[in-house]
Length: 156
Image 1 (cartoon, rainbow, N blue to C red):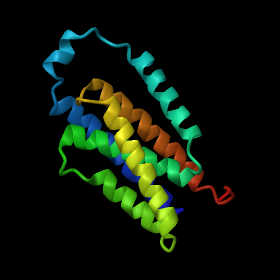
Image 2 (image 1 turned 120 degrees about the horizontal axis):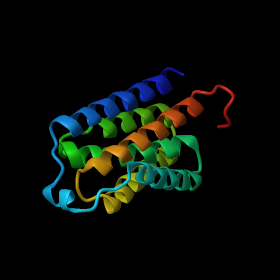
Image 3 (image 1 turned 90 degrees about the vertical axis):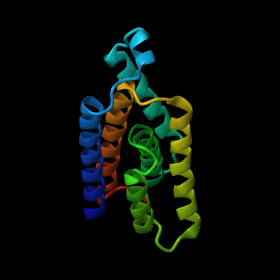
């Protein structure tokens, strides 16, 4: 239960830091300003639908969390630079806890993390306001996963 709470706290802290940096330090690209404005509600619904569809392809909650963290890792490095390894470290810690003596399962979690990273990389080319919506939706998904993972009666 402590590990799930720790992951949840990391997700919320990351979302807060990301949202603050988005509004304070990172201006939107000039070419983004010339594009038509997107409706945040529509974009959010599209993102949530994509996340839900992705969740259905996962074989378990821990794998889904690894995938989610991979997506967050890409977005964070996109906006804050490749030196920012916050979500990679969180994912590595989670994998050490969840698969300490199971190299096969550990590799499966790494593959899920990498799949999330590269799927997000294919979707997103620049740090923008849409990225903030994506991070918010992924953080909420991570929160829900944390709650489910913390359930002592969950199937393993």
